[in-house]
Length: 225
Image 1 (cartoon, helix red, strand yellow):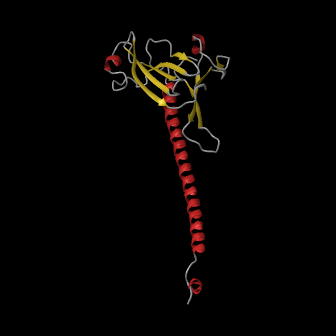
Image 2 (cartoon, helix red, strand yellow):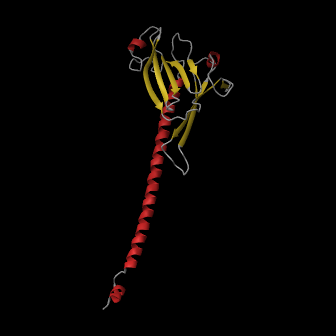
Image 3 (cartoon, one colour):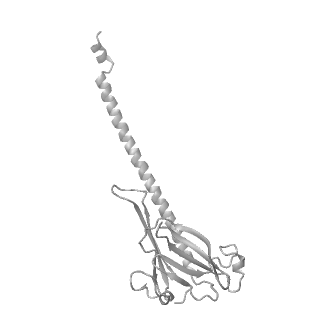
């Protein structure tokens, strides 16, 4: 029995083995590519979900506190002290007099004290929305008692806040800028806009970032209309 007969009866030739190896390699490469695409999609989906959750939590906090502007502020007469495209500062008793809040009993028990001054401002370098709380002792403000980052990676250059009067007209009449004291007195509702940008994630070929846009509009029930 010669070698040719052996190959025909049950063995494989060298060419057949090479072809089989090539086919197996191509199949493995296809499986790896599919797995890698699935993993990339999952990572991008997770990042997008994290961004959405961060935005929703931040939006809820800003909305809740801003809605209370003007609440139980004693002899303070200016509920909204600053109003711009990227910042808002307002006064309210956000902890309803609790000494366990950001302002301790020293502030809460002071005559005409107890109110907090809350500032939300966009850091135009990092794109982070920062929250700062000042405490009132009845005669003066202690600034920076508490500071934190509410939302990260907002698109710098986009408006975060828009202000409206009782007729629904945007203040000021131009599309942005800083509101004057008289304009601030007319604010009845505030739109909060989060345009987030994540430069580390790419969902589609050619995309340089992932964007997420969420917004809500809050009516201020404790200010003079």
